[in-house]
Amino acid sequence: MYKNLLAELVRNGIERKTLAAILQITEKTVSNKLNGITAFTVLEAKTIMRLLPTACTFEYLFFVDGEAKVG
Image (cartoon, rainbow, N blue to C red; front, side):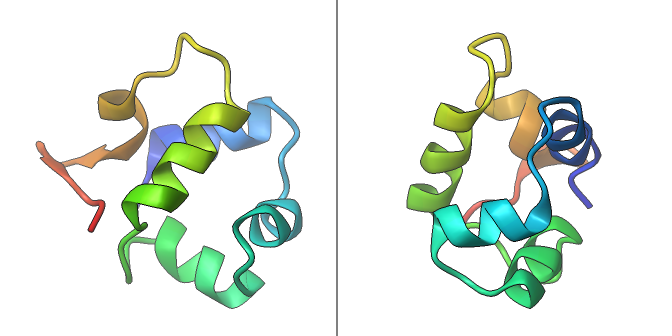
């Protein structure tokens, strides 16, 4: 699970429905990705990075248990 990413999405008022629309995927797919069931693509991760404040680093948002969960 991407706890930091989830927290930043909430902090910035970005709902799962909105994120799904931006990434052009279903809400179920967004849910699976946020819960760590499937990985975000590099393109999806870059898109998310552009949505959030510059203070959020890739490592902060996408590392879980010491490894990147982006494929």
